[in-house]
Length: 301
Image (cartoon, rainbow, N blue to C red; front, side):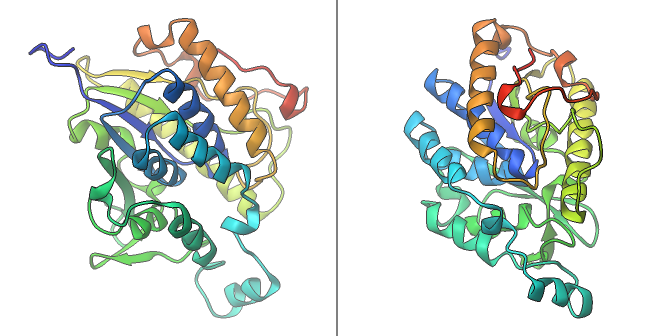
């Protein structure tokens, strides 16, 4: 509750993580089934994609539709690489592939045209690629905002919007945490994608390595900002999956990630996770060697 006796405004905060964005879908499934909803949503990178869909229909049915999209995703739906695109990158372009496939996916499934038309107030974080400044998009064309926020430098071209060249919100000077607070939230529910903490060697391939590094950056940035919040902000970090193997460039395990994240979040809530604000112990960066397959690993609480 706020000091005036009015319920504190709750924000769902979702950052990036490539294919690990499936983990956020499992978390949303658990929250929605318990009637836990957001007053506003702040998303960055793949969190902007998930946040935009959630904000259109923040119900178990709406999350189920988002889950169905994720379960049908293939890498080629997001990163349609070919020998032609690789040749273009080497000889002519400053980005690896176009965002046409991803744009078509968003256009096909997003039910509203402008951000201000979402059922839940939505704020998407992108980065001005020329200055590094944070750009928060709260109105205007929704598809363009989402594509801008997921435009990983070198992988995708920046998006020209409102006179700016916008790229992935994960490289912004502000995380979605700061944006949520600036928009009036005093209670944060953070849905982290986490990172592959159980690898025994670096990911294979340039894109896989870049996305792995990006997930490490996001996790550390979120931890630092949450640890430094004022006492009048209560926050709850849903437990990221741990141990976690795989790659945020691999879309073959999305179903397993969704189900595992839902079970993990269910257990955390049942154990009183939403009654204990400010707990960060399960969110500290760490590493350990993998011992089991992704499907066999139990969630860490």
